Length: 294
Image (cartoon, rainbow, N blue to C red; front, top):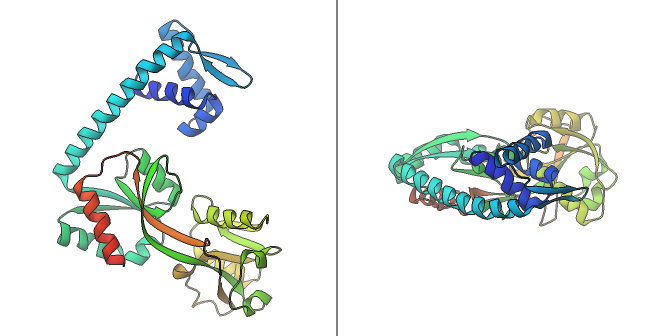
């Protein structure tokens, strides 16, 4: 039994459900069940009572839970302490950026600002929003500039910028004649969205839900925007995107209309793993980017 096994055990204790625990751990239920069974074989005792509603701890499971929880806390404190020491000595940050953020801030400027103004080296990684989140959680990244995950359990969020959304439509569509629209105007329209690896799709879904509307999704695309613009040029649907990142100069058949809804916005900031004590380098970098952007 190792630390990874204990993490699996504690997650099952937390969720009281193998399926939910496996999902949270990003592993299959079969793999999680094998891990729990292996621990039980090593201990020579059952850890859980299993039933159709989930699992509950046995008497021995309760004992192991108490010891494992203390051990994991000590291990996390140990890991964080070593991590902070290494980072203080290295003065290097591994920072993730979701697509679009580097276009606004420019990677060359970020590298030069980090080195010249606060004396640190920045390793830049570009990932989709959800990959930024996973990479911060598993320690691959120190932090990431990405869309607000709205997850206060796993992350601390430090806002940097906020940009409204627009509807990109064919000029022959009736909506193209409006000065601005709301989500009600899109009720019966075929929509083109960025795929679910980006938080923007959830922002759009939440706004439709607030209006009691089920959106009609024609297509979900990766961050190659030319496909979306071409679909709109063919009048196949309306593309919902971020106003400041929209570039349709090469497409004479389409235009963009502001979405006049305050909650329809791309809110971007730095995410850091919750309860991780930030070192001075991280704090200086967040402050620097915030000031430069404003």
